[in-house]
Amino acid sequence: MPQLNVVPFVSVDNMMKLVHAIGIEQVMVELAQRIEDDFRRWESFDKTPRIASHSDVGVIELMPTSDGQTYGFKYVNGHPANMRRGLQTVTAFGVLAEVATGYPVLLSEMTILTALRTAAMSALAARYLAPKGATTMALIGNGSQSEFQALAFRAICGITEVRLYDLSTDATAKCARNLAGSGLRVVSCGSAEDAILGAQIITTVTADKQYATILSGNMIGPGVHINAVGGDCPGKTELAGDILLRSDIFVEYPPQTRIEGEIQQLPADHPVTELWQVMTGAAKGRRDARAITLFDSVGFAIEDFSALCYLRDKLATLPFCEDLDMIADPDDPRDLFGMLLRAKP
Image 1 (cartoon, rainbow, N blue to C red):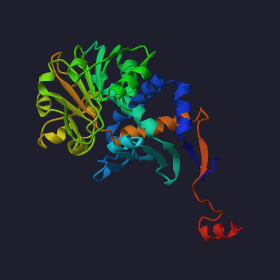
Image 2 (cartoon, rainbow, N blue to C red):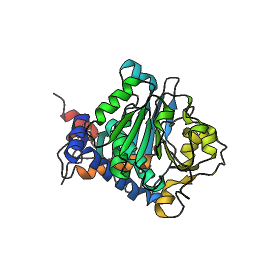
Image 3 (cartoon, rainbow, N blue to C red):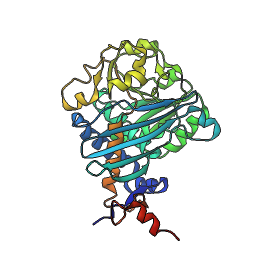
């Protein structure tokens, strides 16, 4: 019988070992499948917009959900100015717990895991929404998420060319260097306009917390799919409003996306389609070859739940965790104080 007071913990070091043991692209393929499986049972989950604590410098959030058997949450921050201090913009950790007892069954880092699941979710959405036979993606914003996005689209959607642009040429050089040998043709571009030339898929993933216009209306013609990843909190967007008005918009959870996503620019009754409905066949995805599809991605708790459950299942056969003594476990559940007394030196 397992020790109820011992909780598996996946550190950053063990997460990296696990990813390399499986393969980065394979992890994202498998994560996408787990997310899709959970989206197909969308109505089984508790759903709420993430609980956010905003400040002038960033946001700290909790993202909870449960399917009635397992409860999960993620703690995550978003602090764009951290980069100037040599710190990560986004950090995270997550917990799974058993609903029947309330006991935690997994604690994990989620800075790396979130990057993997965000990219997997982007490519999963594009598999339903992007033009058939798409081979080229523009990647505008070449920071910490960019390589994950590129590799996910290669593995899940068959992209063969990625066109990079960032205001920081150092960021673009870093991304190109990290993607060398990936099997992708990598083209570094001098402007966003240059990057989108010939691209059937356009991914925007910038970090600054501001109303920005990474893509203006005259840059976007018919027949493309836009994967808008960077707009993920109130006051932070990347697309001109004109693009939204010409696009078929797909979201994870409308009550959250209307607060945090690109559609915060639009009236509250502007029509959007929930992605889970496309996956189950309840709603249509891409209408035709000339449609502009937009995945207004902000990240939702069910995706993190899926990622944590995927990790839990992998640990059944892979040794990349350590045990934490987290839960007090007295011989008599009513005698917690006695347990403390008996531990006196």
